[in-house]
Image: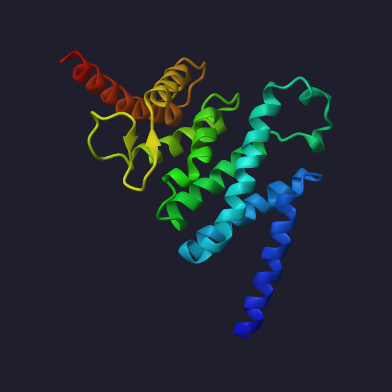
Length: 210
């Protein structure tokens, strides 16, 4: 029975992998992203073998979504060919589960491209994506607990953040606070995300002024 369960799970994972890697039917891609999120929830650290493939696919999806919302070719695509906000949102949700439930080093230099995409997603046109990306930035900042006077800062797991990247987060967070019909959740997270970079930038200014 145990062997049968393992075989069934592996077959299901193979199917999810096939759905996630194709872009012909984005409905299947979205389903795969959501299923992977549930899988990581259930198996946590035991699911770490799936992270390299899934994180690579998530980075590609988010990149395509960010490019598509600003690209002239986006409006010419059929709805089923568009990497829309829902796919980007669920992809970031699954990345959040990977960071919180599966990886010990999710905030590391190894995933710097993913975190750069998360920062860019703070300016996405849909509020849900701005919220999930802002929450992820809060998780990212939580890894930086050392000396705030040395920029670039280095987190406990090797991630780095430079002055221009902190300025980017600060600008995006201020922009979120100016959004009409701003939700309480997004407003609170935007304020939290301002505290850390502003403290670092003020500390850096004081260091340079000495």
